[in-house]
Length: 513
Ligand code: GAP
Image (tube, rainbow, N blue to C red; front, side):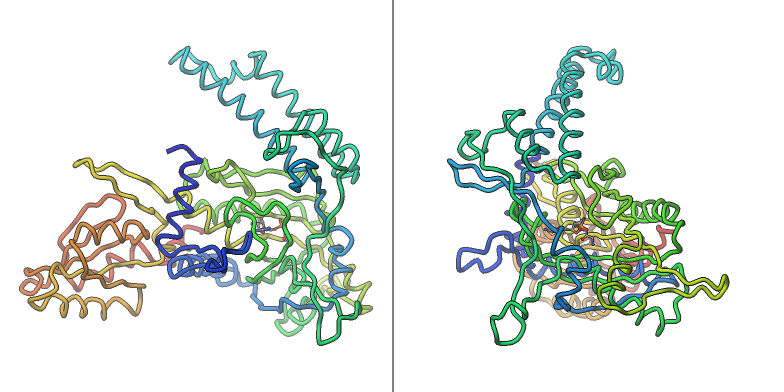
């Protein structure tokens, strides 16, 4: 399967097996909004639990909160979102389609990178074992030409974005001969700024003074509760506040399924530190967050850091943890050194003193902040796209399997009576009753055992337990492992331990030590 086919198969699979549905589907859907079905919501909850326990439970100096989506409108002035949370947009006059100017340029760069990769693959085939990739990349004229072009365009774009120079952004698009993917023409408008926040009215008047925003990040709920948490929790710097919750952005280029949505969920942690220590803490959190991802065993080669060329309005250092999605390496998580920008501004706009008194040194200061921010939905997409496989079995049949990391799998174990008679369903129910308090179990007695295995493979269930006639005598069952399809005969009383060893969140968390 090509990456493109894999992605289309994944979207169809998510719908067919109850992971993700287009929102309001019976009304033809709502663009860039998706609902999670019975399997998707279990997976999402397991991801959130993994994050919460890794951040809050395993760190004695991190606590969690749950703040509201609606907040005082001044918060978004203080945070800079009213003035600076914008995307540069450009329209194609022929197709009437609107694009983010920086995304058009990034897509152009991705195409040049693709050309380099193709050149390398061609040479690898031609020279076989003798092929020296590093040397080829350093000397091949086509590669060097494309590499120079990439560096040049990247630098021009970063400079233009940093300077908010929209005429230059448009000029890059013109100079690179970028055409509209729909109309194929270069008939572009000027580049304009577009604010990404959704607004609505509080109460029953439509007067401008009552305008409030749906939060575009959960972080501000943490900043405005800093004093409450620090005082009531008697927190000492360094300490963190974590939160999981919905965020909303009026994304213009909303695409790639749940990668970029208008309503999505974030898991954010703000770590409050002494000014001057931020670069050390930034490095520590980069390492800690990458370790969290790697512990899932989804392939170390699928992650990389990407340091920001254009820093957000609040940051003095920033990096993304990028994941190898079916459409290439893209941002999964952001780690930002936010300085005292947010607390400092809230102090200014609210008129309340937001300071930390250090009992050891006797000084007071506005804390600096390191933020880790990951989208739950992007994490769901990373897990699902990394897990979906089509395999050809020895007998020539195909099976679709979701090799979801076992602690995140929606259903942990399926209990299957071989036949719907002879007391097998009753014994299977007893097995269910023993397991269901600790594991999400599914009982299935319909169709052949082979079809039932396939159904469980398709939703990523790590274990199937089959109850047969011998089970009535020897109190043993057959346990089948999802990834290897290996089967073993085990005692019913041993099932709990065998399953727990593979699926428990605790063993996953212990990898983080
Ligand atoms: N508080 C900082 C902040 O919000 P961000 O880089 O804009 O930073 C953090 O967003 C994370 O939120 C991203 O790494 C991504 O995983 C997720 N995210 C952002 N916009 C999203 C969208 N439109 N749809 C889905 N996830 C999104």
